Length: 67
Image (cartoon, rainbow, N blue to C red; front, side, top):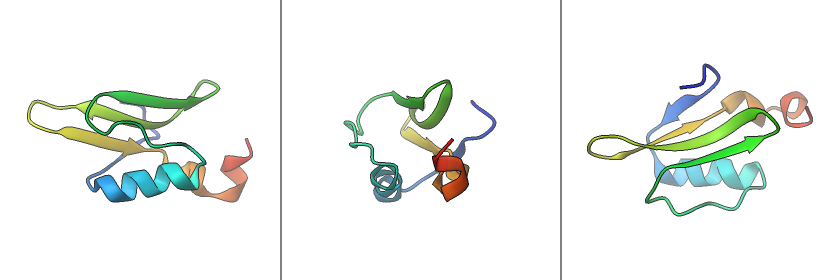
């Protein structure tokens, strides 16, 4: 997993994060990765018994979003 990503356990908060980033939420039933350039900003990863949600929380700050 990328070092900049943190796990978020709530699907609704994950969807709100994506909306904040201006990203349309994907199907939350399968693996998915959202990147901007070479940087991964969000990921859904399938675990053995559940989906796991990861975000790059640092991209929520104004100085990081513009880069």
